[in-house]
Image (tube, rainbow, N blue to C red):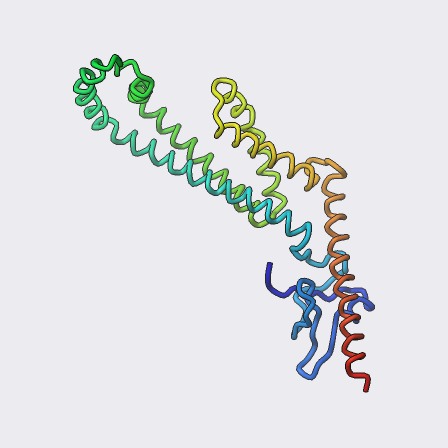
Length: 255
């Protein structure tokens, strides 16, 4: 979004159009803002390998990927919190069970008066089931939750930095859990589950199609060629603007 990006192409004609010599030294045309920046260029090489400036379609892709990255970070932190909760519960289960056994009989008469068998309610049944779960099982549950949280954080890093490996990790990891999400929807439909499934399917479809993953639409070679063409266009556009800038200065100072 900000910061100068200067580049010296190997092609002499393009390089000459992007450079200007001043009393303070050499200046190069910024590919982002079009201003001449004092000092050596930030990079050099063939014009089609110039850095792709984040604007237009490239900026849109970056915004979309970073939106998904933030969602993955939030999900990763949430599962870390779940893992910590299971770990704490597993360590203090004895005292929690004592509290549960002490207060549940006291609440039973109150609920009986309104026609509710408190011991048969779903929350109580769930608590009793968890209480009877072996320590080792809960330990593995905590490890699994933490591992899934870590996976989401890895996706966050890759997507936020706009790395191709991050896109592959996101697609594979997300696709792996889609059948489980569909299974959950078959048993009980909620808006949260539907939203999560739709978001994950949208991410997979977007990455595979636009980033040409797994050989789709020409695969990696076609993706690299597309990026090179975009880079070349940035350089050529900047060089044309440089020529227009020089012409406008010349018309203002004909002498």
